[in-house]
Image: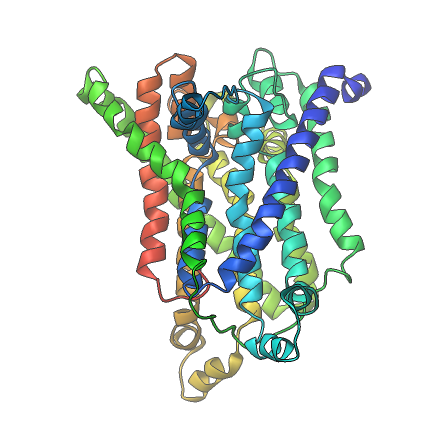
Length: 483
């Protein structure tokens, strides 16, 4: 057992995981920081934040397919370079995984930076400029104190995202040549006889490495403490650079949209199309149920934790720790623990809908809790108390005073979890069966059988479902400034 912790294969996975997580986080932060600052000062910053939020609902499995369509030998980007005499071989390598992870996480960093700047009073910036402060001085003395916490927290979260990335590494990595700790855990359990000692050792190293950025953040929490503001930031006037920023923002979701457009003709090349639709109807309905149940359960847990923290202020640090803990732990690691803990009642090889919903809910809990906690901290009790003084019950007072402010973020979190869970692969890969096979596992199965056109068609349906739910919520509640 002890020897497994120092297995050469495991150290190779540790090395590659650290490389892809560190490099991806560095470039995502390097690009996301100025992008978020520029987006905050854009005249249509609210619209840009809506676009930046759309990739949250794109499953990693779909992102992998999109980059295959771009970086493959017949991909449009490679063909453009070839016309100019350049030869690139990015696909199925560590470089392609890093590129996809950077693109995947830039919107996350930029969105948090933009939201942090939106809380800075414009008067402070106007005074600094009136006193002759240069843009760099304004950034250093006014903007940075309020965004450093958001930047550090987003980079720490991106590092964990990259450490625990599963579908992107599994598909874009191209096999054993790109082996992360996450894929090592999966292969040790699902390929042949389960190797528990290797899976536990890989889980141990992954937890340790994932907690490093949060530990650094905790040690420097005073340096990263955000400034406290409440006045809204006014938008600056239009200038010639705004349209370029808008174009770059759209570029961040372009790979997924282009993949959707490019893959539509595959539907017409499938033989026995009606038989194909009949075969995927079961996985489609199962994925919809999984997404709905996971989103609903996550919201219920969030509301319960926020309510308990409100009722018991002394428990607030403990509750926040419980809600944030899964962000530094792989869903496969949690799945192994769930597997061991409930092995008496649940047989993973027989499949378990309950286990898949629980694991997905746990994996999305930290992000959704962070989003809704920010809303709770900005809550003003005056309207609620006024409604109670007028004779309203606590329930009616909440729906009259607080719910109008809560409904849009709650709907956004629901749509984000629903869209992402439809294509989630890591948690489902441990507890699926032939009778319980969701869309993401079906795509993986079709790929292993070299049925690429059918796998692409299923991926397009999944992308339409996940991205469509996000777009519907963002459009439906377009007046909310926090999206």
